[in-house]
Length: 273
Figure 1 (cartoon, rainbow, N blue to C red):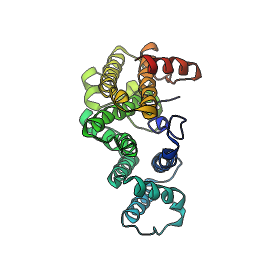
Figure 2: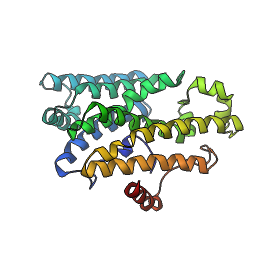
Figure 3: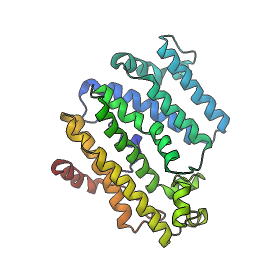
Figure 4: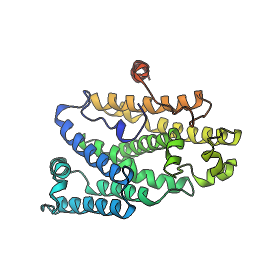
């Protein structure tokens, strides 16, 4: 189980109330399909951006309560429109996701952590905020903690996928941090787990872990099933960080993922912590 943001989406989970399974699936289908437009296949960037603009037009049509002019979008946007209207979901959060996916088409480096955090604000945080809106639990305090969890999950995905992202010519490690620790792109290209690289990864891991722990109390603030779902997500993210450390930061030869054998341990941690 990699900690990919959308793979941690509680799609049709048995922990979800039945009334929320359809809107959650609708949001997931939107996010997953748009992300795939940005990342998958061999389409040229201009084609990817044009298709993401089609998604923006469909969102605008939903907002204006008008039909959208591309029938191929109906499977995604018919059900999404119903969820938006039924639960009064902020359309701006979906636009934030599209902005992040569009950025992925062309941007491959991040100058510093502030710039990377802004990307996470749009690529990850909207998902948690939408879930809180579905549960009518979108208080300012809850939203702030949700943002910490979602940004942390996105960072964890980046740290476990340093080698995978390099194959796409992307580096999400902030360039300022790389310079601070004496890590250059040649180190990543060669898969070299040097002392500077280990120190850099330890710094980034502690940053993600601290952020996750600061957001984790949200799981106890939310009642019932969503609280248990969130506990499992939090523990899954923390467990991946533990695995990176256990492999001495060698994310080049040992991509850390959680398997079936980890599930019982995560459930126990969710119960007792």
